[in-house]
Image (cartoon, rainbow, N blue to C red; front, side, top):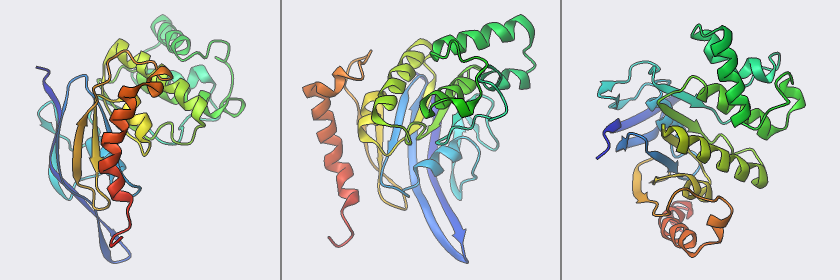
Length: 260
């Protein structure tokens, strides 16, 4: 049985806005296993990103606790890499220099730096664009640069906050395939926030459905689709349709207006 990598214990968060308290997350409890791919889904504003930020040490809980490898999270954990919703590439750095930034911070230089950057560029399908600047790239290419900049430092835990949300369907599917191929090679522990149920089913081992704000866990669904997954053929299968129907039956209730 894989070990528990992330422990979320009765996690709550309340923000203060204009003199009033706004509860974002309430009493969330969840264990995430080593090498597991978990997706968080729910209505807009239900606290998905807030939970991710508390796991990553970017936001302090109002109540409860997050532990990584048994240690309470009090700062950004060294094991964690973060991919944000908006690509965070630096416009003044080339593709190669953007991807290699994390290695520079860690003091990796010379042939080892060049080898790892070259491998990351190859894996991301960016060969030939090493010296290009972000302004000349498509949105999908920029997001690949941001993803590889995180993966190149080999984080054991990967937190992803709707990284493909702003992309068109074709680009998104291509990146799903690339992410799955990379994950199946390294098997990091992944927590992936998305508002797209199809995306969650395509990528995840388990899907955590949250209620409308304040976010609570409504359902934890184990995705039964075998791996490796073909992101195109998958959506044509009866098994995928069954998974979607089962989850939407629960998730869809959160989109019904209160009192409706």
